[in-house]
Image (cartoon, rainbow, N blue to C red; front, side, top):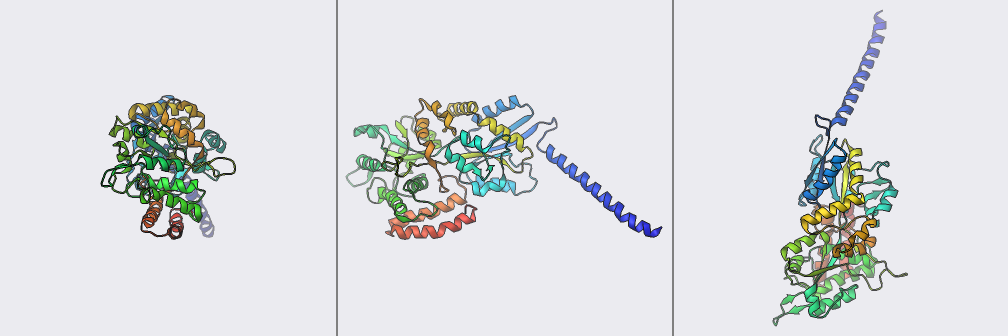
Length: 443
């Protein structure tokens, strides 16, 4: 009898352990399902954004909540300063209830945030949906393998700003379409006093100290020449670096004593400058009387023609992502599906215009016709089909991939001014970039 009990007791203990484990597992699953729900069963979602004003987003959110009374979304607009660090810290803190369910990430951050993201369920978004609904650069940036890692509510990148009064003072009517034209116009519009000091700069580019978004410009020139900013080598890469610095180093149409480029442009001291669309309201607020035009960025002569280099413009924008830790991923993706519908994007654009006086370009080609009458949207839409990007985007403040790559190219620009040959400068860049790209998961 005793020997039988020694056999039965371990079996009973094992069964009790399995039952306890199953109970605790079900309990954990139930807790996970109810996380983010209030006492009335409403799903509570936290949304961290950067690019959109709270009031503009609230209209979109309210519309969705009216259609889905069981969902409540709280939008929290984040400062760009140390945003990526704050985001990462929330996800590294274990069971932190303050993790966002939705968060914006910059299109160049994909290798740094992929582990934080949940991919879209195929019953909400398919790769075909993405390819037919968004511009090619967006497809490149948000699709990884078979996974869709986010969707944007807007698009942005470089445009050329032209001071209308300075242009008309010398009889120029058309904005330059090629870089050769751009250089000639910049020289013609530069004005200096009798001591040689700059009164009006023909164009704001050539330095890395006071040209805002200079790294985007340099990246654009490298790509337009057919070179690769990840591995800049050959004559095309050298030509891009030399051409960028030539405006200050040789042509004298810009110098490092000028105010930051967009400040100088707003004050009427620069004939041409480059800016992303999101900076334009700042210029208008600084000088409401300034007459300026927004046009696509210049291209190489004959770019886009058969047998020649393709046209290339520069993209730098934010993407809405779903947190891998969110217990309500399906609900979040359904909201993003709703938010990226044409009707909702048009409404968001109108509300942003009411608040800021301008909007951001649409991410969808099927909304291109809605740009009628909006010179900013028209200019950007013209170049949207051939946008490209690389992680040397100015102003993301990521203290990571972009800032590290920019630091390497910053030293490259400075080295050209010290008289070091472009070939030697780019050899140093090629030695440094692989380690940086590997460190941040981009290689």
